[in-house]
Image: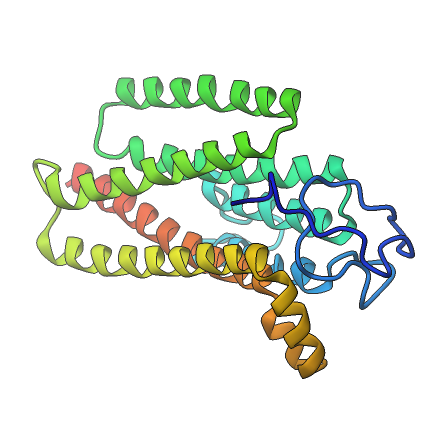
Length: 264
């Protein structure tokens, strides 16, 4: 099941918001405009700040040269763009901004694939990988925009995540010559934690889709603010942000290790 056949529209305040009526093909279990007329999905909007925080944490962490000169790389910029795009989408539930959110998700997995596939290779190979990804991702994004069918986006995103996982397994278990065992052991643990977070997030995403009526009933019994803890799509944002940030740190450490190893 997925958002191609689950759509929770028609909430009591859905037509009372500043951005009403909702036009997106994906509408989540959180009630529209229940907290503020300016924010369509309050918790689903705020939790996108997790992506922004982790992106800025890297940009303005060690090595930053100040507010106007942050550290920038493809994966941190893609994470920041995803946080902003998803914030705008959930805050409005407009179809045009839904596309922005979904294209930003593709941009994120593009950046992670680029980071993983270009490690420990020649510059010629790196250029080939970069060109190949640039050939694949934009046409697929255009195809999705042309069809407007969310199932294509979900399938493409899932395939990219599967390739990322497979590439990580190859690097940590089968790559020859391998990395130092102490490094690999640490990266494996952190990679597994990221995968567990992603798996829990995916499970909660489906709970939000498949058990919406039960969740809404339970939220009504709990009342605010405790009911907000049962906004499962909000947990999807938080947990995927945690998973992405951890996996990105591993990618950067691999790249740094290889650069230092080459210099020695």
